[in-house]
Image 1: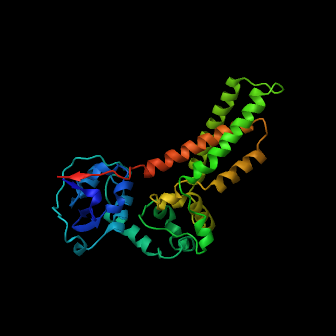
Image 2: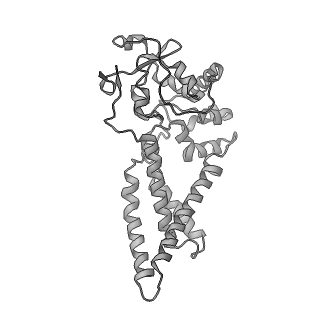
Length: 300
């Protein structure tokens, strides 16, 4: 019995080419244990059977290695059809399409800031941004601006929980406990629930009509889209760019408070909305990075 997570490599093959997906094990959408049947084997049959997208084949190139790098590994070249792999966009591989995605990627120098290079792929931005890679992505040349794009997941609850508790307590004291402005506990709870519902509608609307908006060929629109959401599609496994920086949410909250009538967006509803946002962002992060650090997969 070999604990694969403790080995230096996790080799697989596609079309006779060797790949080491050790770094990808925890980020695989189907979970760590779904890959335990495939170590040292060809995964082409499994990828085709379980409907991997063209983007998945494209991303494999980030794990390509020479056979000399795997000289101590056993590559059998076959695989069973067992397992549960969750990605299903196009369901079949188009070699010409994969090759074209590689050509698009070759127009960019990933060792330099990406934002200023997006004009080179502008006509095919939609295709490029929705073809994920497993790489480090530098956005800005300025170290300060670049640092502002990183947000550890724990910063979100650390920042918002004290604010939610403060707003919840002060509004409860003012509207429920106060004799001058009486509000029943049920009414207070309904305002909170309604605020969470408002957040749900807002989140859906942003994703439906803003985050997934086709920017066309406008370089300004392309760069704007990449900064607000396209980055998440291109490097979806970057754990420091999975949650919204608190500064962005604060700006949105300030805008809503300034533009909406007070009775509609009361502080009680706002508190409920912040709770909805916090729960959403933590679930979103866990969906991408929820594999346990000590998770192991074994091969016979």
